[in-house]
Image 1 (cartoon, helix red, strand yellow):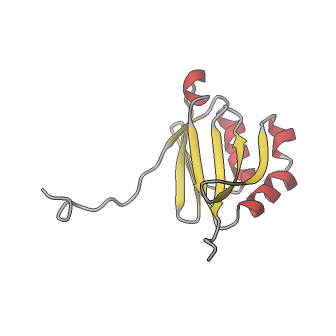
Image 2 (spheres, rainbow, N blue to C red):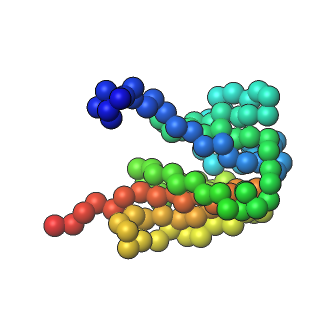
Length: 128
């Protein structure tokens, strides 16, 4: 079957590990995701058209080498939410402030309570 006749992809979701499942659920809700379901050790989160699955499963080396990239309309607004919710203090997580990157994005990093690294970014409009 050629690529032009192959059935289309509808969606792809990552399974994000959680060391403390309940704590991670609270963290993601405070970050701004909506919890759509939570059954059998799998919590389904979404924000707009983007989603992921949080799993009640944890292997330290896996979690600490797992990265998610979230492309948003305004990374600075997301950073403001991280600050307003005091996520670093309340969840003992790490965050680096937003910065303009040479690859044409403004982004910041945020670890979740399990050590998963998130890069939350928006594209910089091209000049000229």
